[in-house]
Image 1: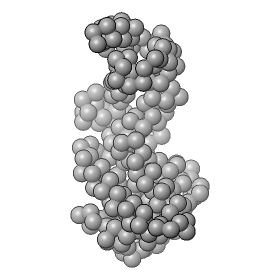
Image 2: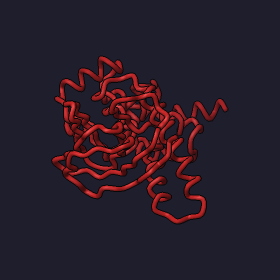
Image 3: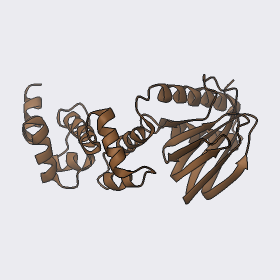
Image 4: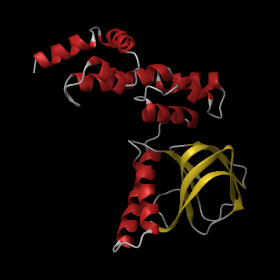
Length: 250
């Protein structure tokens, strides 16, 4: 159960022809976007940071206009209660990507005890898939946007609008769908995460000793003045006043 039989990797690839496997195939997209096509007519659009799981005997192909990279594995008798193909975003801080990368390393290595490690990684990957899939409360396009924001909100170079437009969905549709399901726009959701991280840093619950400018950058803002205005709008006080008040009351 949860036995990893094979682990491979695709460098930039545009098409994988129709094929089947005798066991489950788990594919972690490490770059690009694409679509899995199943013989029953199902299409699963995916992007970097997502896993697509294909059941035994399901004939499928994988195509991408811009090219994709991935780590793919075959697993025998995984212990999840699913019978059809499904898609799961990588929850947390890239835990699935780390597990897939480790599985690839140990599959190729000749380290003593590698079978024991692969067995443990098979159990871990299966558990992650179940937890992340069962905890999903949102539709596919909304969950894709959430995953992108959670992954990149602290990156000052992250262009949210461009990321949404790159999805294989109509821009206005996914924005409206996001607000309906999450209760706020994608930008408001990203800002909420950034302010939450900033409050943690300023109050000393995270790393301490940072200037306001450094906190701004680490929370995804290139401009410290703009960060201060956004922070004050949400919290009613400036970042400096917030930090001084929290530390003074400690």
